[in-house]
Amino acid sequence: MLKRLLLTTALLAPLPAQASTITVFATNSYGGGVLAYSEIFGYSTVLATGPDGLPVSGGVVSAFHSGNSYELAAHNVSNTIPDTLNIYALWQGITSPTGLLTVTTQMATDEYAYYPWYVSEAVYINGQGVVGHTQWYQGGPPVETFTVSPGVPFDLQLQLQFVSDGAYPYGDFGAYVIATLADPPPVHAPGPVVGAGLPGLLALVGGWLWRGKRKRA
View 1 (tube, rainbow, N blue to C red):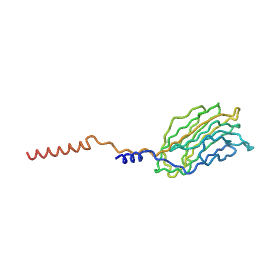
View 2 (view 1 turned 90 degrees about the vertical axis):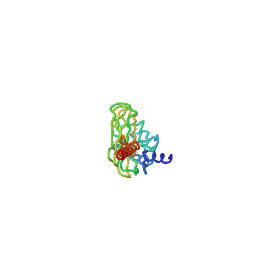
View 3 (view 1 turned 90 degrees about the horizontal axis):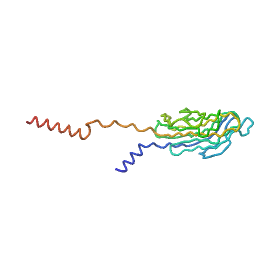
View 4 (view 1 turned 30 degrees about the vertical axis):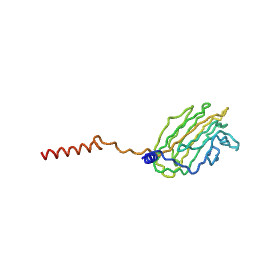
């Protein structure tokens, strides 16, 4: 009985989604480049170069997953020129037992130095946008949940975008985006009808016996 209960619990729990590859990269108006082909934690690096090929943007980037949750975060981001910096984490070949998926998102700007910089976060499945938000302040939207039909396998891409004015002191911004993937909850069967089940069956049998006695009388 215990083994059957554990099996039932496992079947109803969200099933893990596994990715085969990850690419972390950054782009700006003058090009872009790969930051890593593996998950990274607190990786301090040059994020972009300018028209002369010299570094213009830097920061600390993390891109990793834990269970069904995938996260991209960047902090201490600076940019010495007026430009748009994009940081991406792309997980490819994610598998899931069903073709239907719920995506729960969390995103926010958690380091905001000054206006007029603004920061955006976005989530994509197979290149199609699921959700995106922009902040001119510290904070972000509430947790949101979406249902998509990505097919199997599928790709998940998280994006952070920093739009800078290039003015001194050149930044100190940070943001994160998290996507948690799960199979949709099971569709529950309708509850028992009042009067059905064993009590209803006993009442039905009792009625038959009473009618039989009346006929014999």
